[in-house]
Length: 303
Image (tube, rainbow, N blue to C red):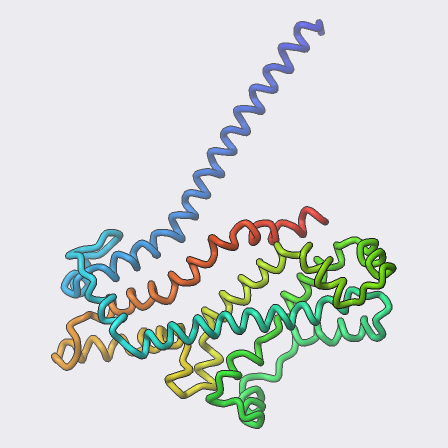
């Protein structure tokens, strides 16, 4: 085969590969668009239902655009003092839980990076065992009762203040920080606290932001612990309030038909409540997005 034929053959193969790559990119783009629509369309439907009239909701005429546009559902939800109180309480609770959980996670992960920590392997095994074994609902309830935590806001903070999974992520990230940085600081007289504050934490901003987002979303969306341990309405988080609204949907509709309550249909009330419970946490994500993406991919880069 001549040199010219070899060059032509290479060009043909390159063009075929280029066409194949473009076709693959198109297929991936179509699949991504389909997945985006799968997640986005239900959210758009919720927005449309929250802005539609009760008559349109009753007749199932709402799809992805509001029908007979109205703010009635939002006015009804916003005028509900219990709902507004739950929203404020949940926001405060989320901030406190996130800060306390991050403190506990750092406090647990950092000492486990020291090779000379006595019993480190035993402590690691003991912590990991808690991921596989749990006492169960009834023993947990009895424990909360004996600790006098029932109907106490601390019951929404203390039991879930440390996620073993998140701690393992942070510990693995700390292990990826070169030991020479710590050793040089220790030679200059720095103690563990100084090493943590001036070396490890500044280098761990991406993973810390990611874990903080995990904790915040988990607390904001959590309601099962409040459902089991809290009966006082003042300590009901927003998701529990939403759960109650959805559970009482049938009774609200029956009462509305009998003329005993507001003409706002339960579907519109539910949709407006979902929006109130979802939007605040969505507003937080863009501020942490660059840290979140970096924190999620950092393990693959280091590995």
